[in-house]
Amino acid sequence: MYRNLVAASALALGLAGCSIGISQDSHSPRAEFTAPVDYKDAYDTAVRQANACLRSTDNAYRVSGRLDTASQAGTVRVLAPYSDNEMALVDVKGAGPGKTAVRIVMWGKGTWDAAAVRAMSDAIVYGLTSCSSYMPLDPKPVKPSRDLPR
Image (cartoon, rainbow, N blue to C red; front, side, top):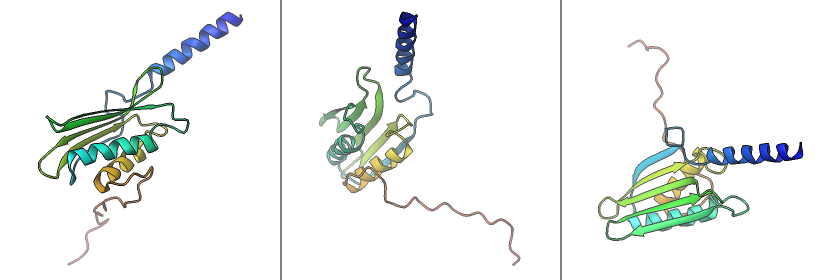
C-alpha cells in the first residue's frame, strides 16, 4: 500500500514537471517590440531583471544568458530546477544604432505571468529593474456607445 502511494506521488510529480514552463502554443504571455536602447544594454538589463525578479523567492531557478556580439543578439533564460524547463525567455537583437528588437515570453503562471512581461519590457526600455510595472498602459480608444447628433 505504502509503495503504491509513493509510486503514485512520484508519477504525479513527474507529470507535473512536464507541464511547467513556456508552452509552444500561444498560451504563454509574450511581447515583441523595438526598444530605443543598444542591444548590449537591453541584454544586461534583462539579466539584471531576471536575477532580481524571476528566480522565485528561494532562488531555486537559474538564469542563463548568452550574448553574441558578432550577430548583435542575445538570449536570457530562466530555467526551472532539475528539469531546465524555460520559465522565461528574452531574445534581443540589434535593430540599428540605439535600437533593439525584443521578444519576451513567460510561462504564464506565478512569478512568470503577464505582469512579469510588462515589468521586463519596462526594465529594458527604461534601463531600471523593478519587479512591477509602474508605467500606465497605452490608452485604448473609446468607441462611442451611440452616434451623437450633428
